Length: 314
Image (tube, rainbow, N blue to C red):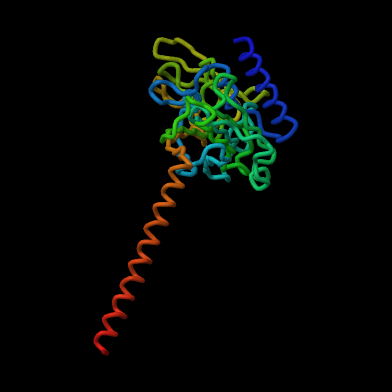
């Protein structure tokens, strides 16, 4: 357990360092490392991925992967996270910022991240500046990436090595399901359960707005007085656009600001076949035999036709 915690902390530090010094990604509450630190297993019994607990808005993703792979072969699984790159999100500091993206890939046990010397130059070029890491020491078949700049990384590429049943008796030549998730933009809820500033904030009580003030930091304070004279103050984080004004009558839970969320999380599942090479050889041998048989039948037919033609001429 201590090793696992150290591993997660190390991943967190590396991710922060890469984003601050290498990729210049805007601050985000959507770090996959947060899921690593709060969920020992990112996939719940009902199939829901942990990322969906913070990214409440749903947005579609796409998966591209081979239908079948051979043992010890290196292949790529691609998660596409499309979105309108002209849109910007509200950063943690209240300022507009480009969207980040992140992804998680849950493969069957035995499938691992390919080593550098196993990855083609083309994939290395596509993944330049991208840091992919195992979810934990316990789950080395689960990979996470992000947050990284969305404008240049809407397609997340995971180079994977297939296991070998001949070396691992726990692995069988079967069809395996795998799961993928991808998010764009910041989450609406922190792992602690607190709301981020990427939310719609509702009125704490029904009544009249008597005062709206803005601080130097950009936060707005809204004072609401109900029919009994009870006064409540609500702070709306900086960067959010208010949709109410002083003197307006509001209902309880009525939205006080425009919804700033432009991102969302999506998850998909697919299947991959771990193919037995012997079956492929057997299939090729069968096809070859069928082909030879067809050729021999054609030759035999032509020979028979020649014999018939010779007899008629005679």
